[in-house]
Image (cartoon, each protein chain N blue to C red):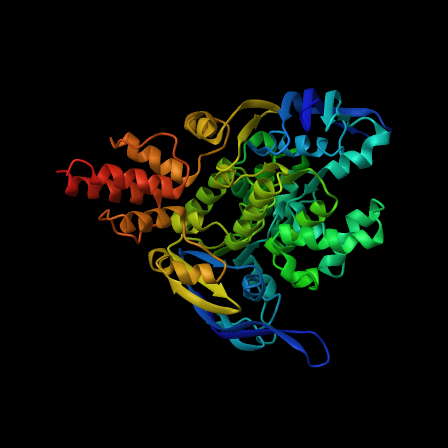
Length: 288
Length: 284
C-alpha cells in the first residue's frame, strides 16, 4: 500500500451509557469516510463545529478505534493492538491548547520525552532533539522553561516533540485557535517548512481558511461525512457551498469575488495577496 | 462610565520580587461603545481584564466605575461584577447546571433576586442570544460548541450588565458560529446600549466591529484609536506580534503596484468599493 493514511468506510459512534452500563444514546460522529493521503502530502480538513473533524483526527493515531470500517496508518490497521505504538510514532498529534501538551521543565527535555519513551538510545537523543527543534524553528529556546514561552512557541515545541519521534506524519487539530497573529504565522510557517523541506505528511484541521491555501488538498466535512474535496482553488471556488456548511473563504478570495461580481476581469482561482494584487494591477494598467 | 487612571500592576512573586504586568494604563469606556482590545500573548490583556472586575487591585493608579473608586474599602464588588459582565475564554467549560435554563438563572439568584425575576431574566437572556426555545430545558452538555457558548453569554446577560467584556469569545468556533457571536455582541450594543470590550486575536473581527481599538504591548497601552488609525501602523503592529487585516496588506500592495487607492482600508466591502472607484477614475 502506497498511502500513508487510508480509511475505508470509516464510521464512529459516541455511545453514552447510564450508571448501569446500559446504552442511553448513540451519536454517529463519522459516517462512511473514505480518505487516502500519500506520503508528503499537505492535506487540510475543514468543517463546522460538530462535523466530525476532530473525531477523524483522533482515529489517525489510534486514540479512537473505528465502530465500522478500517483505518490504516502506513499499512497498519489501527485496531491491531500490537502495532499501537508504531502507529502513534508514525502519526504524531498536536492539539489546540498549547498548555496541555508540554510536560518537561525545560524545552529540550520535553522534546526528548517522546523518543526516550520509545526506547531511543540515550546517545542518539541530543542529536534528534537538536534537529527537531531546528526544524520547528524553536532551537533558540532549547534551554527555556516552557512557562516562559508564548502560545505559538509552545505549539512549535509540541511539533518538535512529534518530529523527535521521527514521525512521518503530523496531525494538527486546530493548532492556532488560541494564538495571536504572530504565533499563528510562526506555527503555520513551521508546518509548511516540515512539509516542504522534510517531506513530512501534514494533516491540518483549522477554522482559519487562509491557513489552508498552500495545502495540496482540502477535505470539507459535514455531518460526519466528506462533503467534497479538492485543491484549494477548487474548494474555494465553491463559496455558496462552503457557506451552506457554516464555512467561508479566505479574505483574498472574498475580495476577488466581490471585484469579479462588480465586473472586473480577475481570474477566479487566486488565493494569495500578491496574486490578487498582481491581477488587479494588470487589469488596471491594461488598455491605457 | 468606567475609567482607568494611570493603572499599574505588579504580580508579587514573593520575597520582594515582582513581575510588572501593567504600566501606567489609562483609558475610559463610554456607554454603547464597541471597543476592541488586542495584544500579543503576555501583553497584559488578561491582567487588565481581571482588574476591571476587581479580581486584582491596581498596584498604582485607580479604576473608577461611575465615578467611584472600585479599589476603596467597602466597595460592593459583587454589584460591580453584575454591571461589568465578564465572559471568560471557553466559558462553556463553566456550565454546570442540569438544564440550560437553570444555568442561566444561577447568576441572578446569586445576587438575591426573586425566583420570578431570575426566570424572567433567564428567559429574556436566552432569547436574546438566539437560542431556540426547545433547547431551554436540555442539559447544556447536549448542545453544540457555539450554542454552549451562547448559553454562557446568556448567563452573563441575565445580570443585565452595562459593560460586557468578552475574552476571545470566538476561539475554536466555525466561521458561521463566529459571525453569530460577533453579530450578537453588535446587537447588544446597538439595541441596548451595552458597551462591549472584545478581546480578540483576529484582526479582521476587530476591524469590522470595533469603534475603537486598544492595543496592549508589554504591559503598556500603545494605541487607543479608531480602527483605521490603529491599522495604519502596520509595521509597529507587526513588531508587537500583531498584524493588520488581510485587505490592508492587499491595498498596500496595490499602491506599490501603481494602483491609485487609499491604503488605510480595513474591511472587504470598503476595499472593493475603493478599488472599483480607482478603476472608474482610470477607465472612465
